[in-house]
Amino acid sequence: SYELTQPVSVSVSPGQTASVTCSGEDLGKKYICWYQQKTGQSPVLVIYQDDQRPSGIPERFSGSNSGTAATLTISGAQPMDEADYFCQTWDSNTYVFGPGTKVTVL
Amino acid sequence: QVQLRESGPGLVKSSETLSLTCAVSGDSMKTTHWWAWVRQSPGKGLEWLGDIFHSGVTNYNPSLKSRVTISQDASNNQFSLTLTSLTAADTAFYYCARHGGSYYRGFQVWGQGTLVTVSS
Image 1 (cartoon, one colour):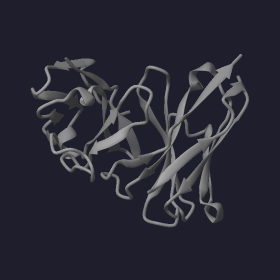
Image 2 (cartoon, one colour):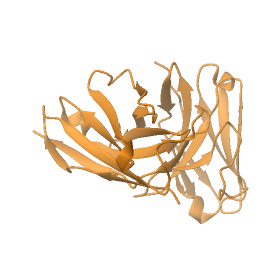
Image 3 (cartoon, helix red, strand yellow):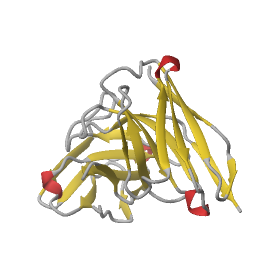
Image 4 (cartoon, helix red, strand yellow):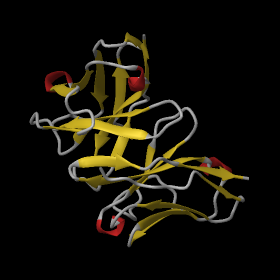
């Protein structure tokens, strides 16, 4: 079965840029979505189709995908962005999620 | 505003069957969207269980396919999850979600989730 890999944690200072990577075989040939999940809350879709933002998602969230890795970038991270971030793709008629990355803003 | 709400037992016994229902409001199930179940073991990652289209077509995660059934009650705008032969490994938060219709559009709307604990 297809697997996605993410770093366990990423730390960023307020106002700086955080990058969260997601790796998988030939991932650049697939589409990626990203979800934000704050403690005790349901996931929220922040990026779909590699680099598209749903309505209401701040512009500081952006995405890219090429080769074997996708990246979620938070430009000018804010304390409210502290959360777990999960990547997700679709392979062999199955939706696959990455293990998640805890982003700490401090 | 679309809202999803899961309901069902919070505690079930090992080897028994879990049944959960997701009530959809603010949208009709008879659209281009797919309606899914996703679970998350406490402190762990997300796992897609399966989904259903209003025509009745279903897709399931191969890792659980023999134990999972998703059905719908379109007239009441709700859909359900049945998971058989429960073990402690099935203890998790269970979310229902609306998918964007094409595989790259993502799970756009999520319910608040319901915690299911499997006891021995």
